[in-house]
Image 1 (cartoon, rainbow, N blue to C red):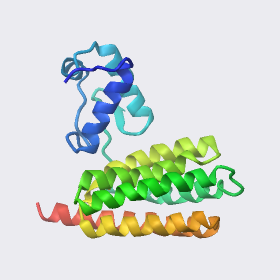
Image 2 (tube, rainbow, N blue to C red):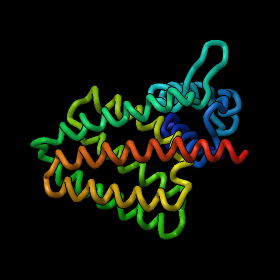
Image 3 (cartoon, rainbow, N blue to C red):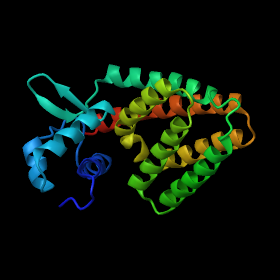
Image 4 (cartoon, rainbow, N blue to C red):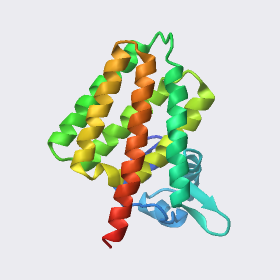
Length: 221
């Protein structure tokens, strides 16, 4: 696997992120800079820069005397993350009040839901998960408060890695589409208050169901 694009850091970032999304790299996996440099046929410098970027965005953690690894959260940390995500999205959506570009957000979300539906119909788990995450990330991108936007994006990145098990269940993927559609309808009507309530309910339900699904998977081992 060789890097072809001009920006080595961007290309390596995309490749590592793809491995995370495809579950080739799972929480706790070590990232060996030397091995990654050989895999991508590049020097160690762009790999280090990429890992630093992944650390900043919440995908990777750097522990003393251990080296970088895909972030692995305890059950308590996951619960805290899910709760924080709900609060952050309340503020994200609050910033939509009087937003001139709301119609563009609506258009983007419509396209994302169409992709999510297509992935569901073809039983594409990874496509469903990617579209679902994109829905949330796009809403974050339209947040007018930069500090909240950056914090919410990092939290969503970590949520994204946790909830793949949730999206693996077909009924949950269908529920996600239904929830996203209801949120979209509220935004199209300019009903920010309702959109906030719906997103809060969606995030809480997804978090609770994920924790339940995780327990089921652990008990089945």
